[in-house]
Image (cartoon, rainbow, N blue to C red; front, side):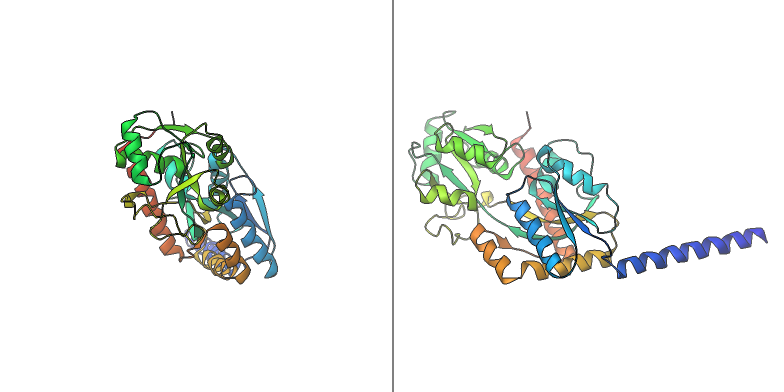
Length: 323
């Protein structure tokens, strides 16, 4: 008799918990949403996080942006991965923390299992820029010069594990050239040293490179995309230059902890679609050289999985390490 009563009590408790969970999801959000940006203020990740927060605010919800920086974004991502799976803590995920760094170092979170995608808001392309002292006016000329002068050229990157680092190593392998990697702590110091002539080249992000290209402080050789950029219509793509495997660039999206209710993820996805389809946000994207993506959570999961595999293959093939 007592056994039967215990079963009934347990069943009632489980039913209550399930109903409460559904009610919480239906009432979402009932408290402020925290958007964790794992990188410093002012960059694309920060811009995208704040754009989403602003639009949520305009829709009558409270969203707070917190820049939780360190370890190339790993600290912020780890914080979100270990947060309650209730939709109130969101990570601005991106290429490095979700697809590149896991192949280069041991993390305290599994990006494929512990972080669930809402959507990728936007992507951009890298552009190969060189110092004017480098005797090349095209990607083919650069390769020819590098082959004739092994070890003479250097390429800067925004840091170990950045797309600038990865595509530079991929370029070395694809072209069969010997160029030395010089990592920096961010895009700004890498670009500054390129302009000063301390390094030979850099795969930079479009929006940060364009002003330096326009002022002729650096020379653009190729955009790492399948189509020419409206920001640099006269610069050929890596596909046109004969290196289609170099097509790549940073991307930025939103992720929540594993086990977040699907209804909450769907709600957040719907809000993201509204936010990033707003005319003023679209205009901002154009100015920054960003291309909207905004796939469904399922489409985004496939995209991120493909990126994870792609960069894992590059790391293995080029034998890339952080040392």
